[in-house]
Image (tube, rainbow, N blue to C red):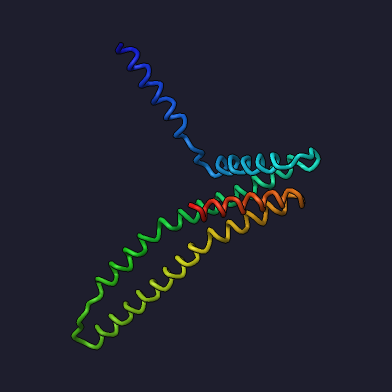
Length: 170
């Protein structure tokens, strides 16, 4: 009885572990995503000469790899933003609120100006980082469409439209 429990428990843990593993490197993610798109396009096209060739699949994978590495760099850059916010807060807290002399007032004003510049720089960086995923997605779609033939582009556009419709429905 105990052996059955241990065996079933270990089997359950083994299968859960196997399904929980997801591709972690940009290359692995690019490969799995581009293969999925290629399979979809090939499944919708019945003429063998119009199906994807190896060069097109490689171009799609390269475009997907560029997208994945770009997204990883955006995530890495966004992780540094909270540290910059804390630095700005610390500097702002260190600036004296009340000053006795004109010299101290000028120094406090200069520090406040520096803090404002840091805040503006942070806002600009945040805006760029927030816009970057959309730019990467647009470039990905553009690069994939460049690699495909006219019939294949129609199928790809249909796939994107279906995905957007599902996303809106949810």
